[in-house]
Image (tube, rainbow, N blue to C red; front, side):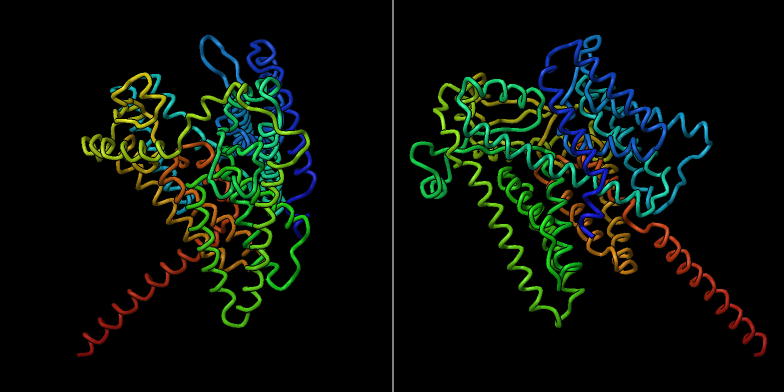
Length: 532
């Protein structure tokens, strides 16, 4: 089952293309003409693929979102405007869909339950955009709002009839993206830990300018450094990629399969290896938002596993907990092994290009600055709680970041980008924006529960993907993901795996029964009154 669902031809092709595009991006970075040529070729290929089959276009789009971070793996300046790989793929996919739809005269079919949250969100985005351009800096407003164009992928997604084969294609893109992210992250950890500063400069500049990952030099906690690292090199690196969210999704899917599909069977070796790889990468990210999201999501998985298993299988499930815990330990060991690998020998990092800035980084000051931002944000929100202040609205607060205080001793800092996710939505799109996201969570939860009940053969997958939705909404409390292509893309990604048609039919039948009962009761009463 695992190979059939995740490791087919689409997996291999996707992984190869991701590696090829990344290798291509290295030599052409900051090279205007080669970058434009590369973007043009990718755009044409994507458009042809999407025109021949709308599914191919979506697979390319999802693949780029899943590994692309901020979408700047490839970019070039056109008339002073920065054209990124994500923009090129979006334009190609949507243009191909539009041409195909006009030619075939087949358009998406609207479903009230599934699509209402997206219509509410589009309305909120429209209001936020109009206010933003009217009241705030136009450049800031555009930069702030452009992530929401990801919602347009809903159109080609709803134009496809999603059978099991097409869903499998999506899962293989997810698996390929997960493997690519894990290998890429652990490779960065290895290179930054083992290459001398002179050789590392090029790697550092590519990762920084392509905005693939945040790499931070760490010398603690003391327990880990003193007991598990050598005295000659008591440091290691935190490598955080926004795309790490998708490896969390894969963890949830594998864990859900362990406790439902494989609850009394051996977990496939490749699935175990992938879970270990994901755990090692998750540890490398050291993301507290992801830890919080994962804790809540795994609790949700545990709840439904208990609900499904009952008292009969609790001992077997307890053994499975131990087995999953053992794989998690292996993941931590793999991360540690990448750090302490003696070949090549650890260098002196003081000559590295990033050494001083990394040493100055203090996650504690980042946390305190985040809390300093909260009250000024609420003050701005209360100025227009219903409609919001529009995209690009700036807030001034006092930051404890030493880099900011080096240029401004008072610590005052003004920005329109905020770590408080839900306050960001409320500030820029008003209450309607919050209502749209909450309504999405409500209807997806309802569709998940229906699918969970009616489709036993895919319970493992449905539960794992829904846990990803839970983690996304929890992580957004402290890190903005719902207003990012990664979050919006995943919100779209899960839709084909839920039985919206069955749920809609059941709701219609339930409403029909209620409507039938009421007139019958009325007629009975009327007859009795006539008899009296």
